[in-house]
Length: 427
Image 1 (cartoon, rainbow, N blue to C red):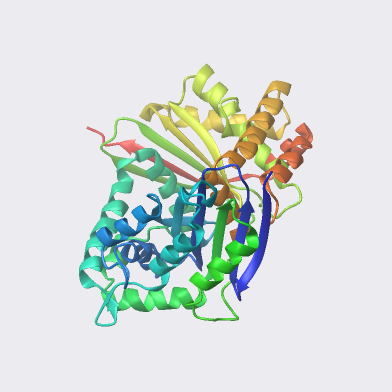
Image 2: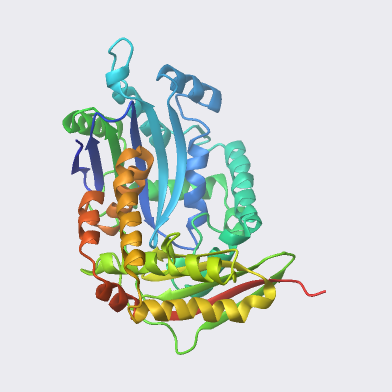
């Protein structure tokens, strides 16, 4: 059995502790939650990468590696994520649980100290970040931004949200863009880092066998160097209720062998904060979220119109995004068929096996979250960003109650907002 508690360590600094004896390792993360903006996304994404290069005590990767080896070969990795219109940057660490230490020594405290040392005591030169570290990590980040185009499926989904949310924070990529990253200097990054430490809401997460009071004490001490601020920023997310009068259509041509068709729908203001959220979640699954969904079974399998076709939900933003791979000349047929399958869901034309199969898949996914520390951390970070406290188990119980009519009613509110098509170059 695991017990989940949440408490405030300092103003705007929260600890969520999952007390469990299920795992041989402990999981610890510290995440800064900042509003996603074009101006700051690149710098925010760069900060954990630069911090991971060295601290005042362990000035390079080699020294850090040796410190981790002393913790039975623990690992600390930078993490940059996006939840709604909040950018989440920080570190996730995994290390041997105290219960398995060979000589009964404590591992939680030194691991928490090392994690917070990375965050709060960076290696500096002339009072700012090392220019070598900044230059090296800038090049790496620009490479990552450029490399996004190599995975055409992910690229098409990214371009869809960029076009659909052009005037909303959600359209900003979590890594920022090449132009703003190129302009970053050691001095400007240092300034942004100070701002983040001062203003961002801080989410600390622990999963392991240590008692919550001990975890809170260890992290209070390790984070004592954080600036005190009574008014740390709460994450927010704007929701546009309806689509425009006509869908925006964006076409791009590239040297590709397979077309990518991506469709973006607005959910009519339905988000994770609504009472009927489980019905929305199920509607996405029935439409295109599982291998039993209408898109997979009909558009892909029966009609062979797509190499793949699936739908995902952006629950804080109220968006449903469809992703598909098609032959260039199947654009119209595939698009019409995807929309026809949605109409079937809206009319409630859902077989028992489609409804129950989706329900079992979703509930299975909820419950399996509890068997994976990394996925649990992802889940609770999302809940914190949304200001929600519902556990995977509680959400699974709500999914059990969803009816066919509720699924159809949720889908009926969706409106097509944007169509993105990546096609080949003629010739």
